[in-house]
Structures are given as C-alpha cells and as structure tokens.
Image (cartoon, rainbow, N blue to C red; front, side, top):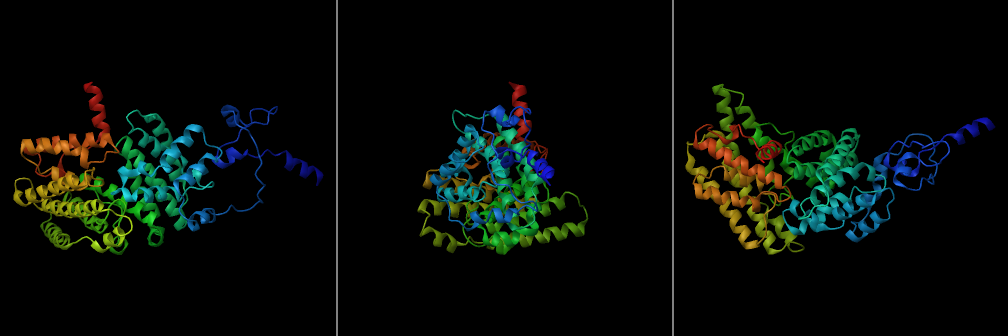
Length: 469
C-alpha cells in the first residue's frame, strides 16, 4: 500500500496552464519543475488546482449552466474578467478586449447600431473559464480580422490564418450531443466564418455548411429558447445561400417558416422569413443546370410561379419593428429595416425572373426591379447618412442588370456603401465580378449571370493583382 501511494504521488500532473489549454505538458528536465511551455513563456508553472476524482468528466452542459442562467454582462465586466484570466498572453488579452469590450467593433455585422450589444453578447454568452480554450482561437482570428480594418492594422494575415487553423481543428473535433453543444458550435463557427470572410473572402460558406449540418439534430429546439443561436444560424444560412446562388448549388438547410417569422433579427432585420424562398430559388437553379426534360422543366417553372406569387404577396412583419422601436430602435433604424426588407423581396423576384428568362428576354421587368432596388438603397442611405449593412445579396442581384455605361460606373462607386466594409477583399471581388459579367453580357458570351464563368473568387483576384504588380 505504501509503495502504491508513493508511486501515485510520483506521477506528474499537467500544470494548471497546460491543463486549461488542453495542451501537452512536457517537463523541461528532471532537475526543474517547469514544463517547456511555461519555461518558454517565462510563466509560473503550478499545479494548484484540486485533484478531481477519477471517473467520467462533467459534460459541457453542466459547465455552461452558469452562463445560460446568468444575466447579460456589461462590457466593463467582460474586460475585468479577461484581465483577471490567466493563460492569456498580453496580445491575446488585448485582442479579446477589443472584440468583447467594445460593442461598436461589431457594427459592420449588424443591420442597425442598436444591435451591436446583442451581437457582442452572443459571443460573450459562450465565454467561460472552461469554454475559453475552445473558443479562444476563433475569437482571436475574428478580432485580428477586425483589427485589419484599422487604418494602421496591428495584426497580420499570418496571425489570422494561424488562429483560424487551430480553431478549425477545434470545430471539427467538437462533440455535439445536446442543445448546448449545438449553441457552442454555432458561435464558434460564426466567429471563424466571419474571420475568413473578412480576411480572404472565401471559406465562410463551407464553415457555415458544416455547422448547419452538424447542429441540425439539436438546433430546432435550441433556437426556440436561444435568440443568439437563432440569429447565428440565420446569418450562416444567409452566407451559405449567397454562395450557393452564385455557384448554382443547393444549400444545406431550409429554415422552417415558424423559426424566422417572429422578432427583429440583428443581421436580417425584418426579412428573415424571405430566406426559405431564396433556398427554394437555389434548389431550382441547381436543378435547371442538370435537366433538359421538358416535363421536369415545366414543373420547375410552375414552382417558380408559386415562389414569385408568394414573394410578391410577402410583407415585412411591421409589428415586430414597432414593438422593438418603442424600446431601442431610432426612426432612422426603422427606415433601414424597411429598406432592407424591400430590397430582399425585390431581389427574390428578380432572381425568379432571371431563372425563367435569359438576358435579352423580357428585360423590362428586370430593369424595373433593378432600378427599384438601387433607388431604395440610395434613398435609405441619404435619409440615414450611414452605410447600409447586410444588403450585399440584393445589391449584387440588382447591379448585374445595369446596362448603361455611366450607370455602371455609378454602381461600382456604390459598392463601398452596400457591400460589407468589413471585408475590403470582398468589395474588390464584387467589382471584378460585375465588370466581367457586364462584359460577358455585352459580348453575348453568357445568357444568364448565374451561368457566368467568372465566379467571384477573391483569392484568384488577389493573385492576379500580385502578378500585374
């Protein structure tokens, strides 16, 4: 017994820092008590945590109970918590404070300023001492991407890629067994997708597709009681739908009508309930690429008629905005919400029309819808005197239809006001895409912008720019 006890005492436990980070704790040598990581970072190497009894580990569900049942924390509280959290390097702490301690940091990702705090709280909700190792790299990648938008960025692309690579591994290995796991996956995936979208302009759709598919068995019940998960999921659906529409692919998830009709979404405002119609348009577009059967084509055209009629009759849930405006929303924000809803509705009508009619066929209705979208965006921007957020999809749908040379130049200038300013590389890809589609249309190389051989690819564009330089 004495020998067994002595042997148990001689077994080296992982130090507290390596334990929290789930990192390998490798002693430098038998002559020192420090591990290689603490030695390299010049940190105290301690094992002060209590010895947990042997047996099965606690489920993440229990670790997150304190967050789910606690009140929303103010930014000052988060900053204080981060400053008192061990195992964060100074530069990591600064980035997390930048991301989680300043609501205005997330302004470019929400439709109105009143939703900045909600967007930040959606990230904070999953942040506990136990969950920090899981979400840290995704949050650092996201914060680093936002830092690059500063006139004098303090982070480089290499740092973002390093954190994003680590976060990707964490996301893929994350077990999803219940609603809390699903909520954590959606938050982790959203932060990672947004960092990739901001930095290289691609990869976000693949991350969204993975998260939406992985959480599907649990998320329907989770979103009913969790507004943060509901909004993250809606935003992921939007990012994936945008990609699928351009590449004529089928999205992974069609939101149920009851899950998107209530409330004002921080990204999609009043038009979340239009997403199922965009899903249906993507599915029909995908089907049209692989069939020549006249009976199938007739069925698809009949489905387009049904979608067109439903979208034409759709109206934004004004009561949702009215109930919230009494508490938070300003009059200019109501203007933004209504404009956003209108252009998404018109955008769906225009896509439905172009799936039926190629360039040169019944261009008049397409011109009318295009001009209505661009005019609505222009009026809303003039009234509110601020850039419009989360309207990239309808703007690009409308911009493709512009044919007059002077109007095309003005449309390219409008990209800075309507395409996400959180991603300069995406803006560049949008300009390149429009120029090429316009050229193909003028030369009659393509009869439909959905068939354009020039799909927006920021990586290819950046390579071309470097070669030209």
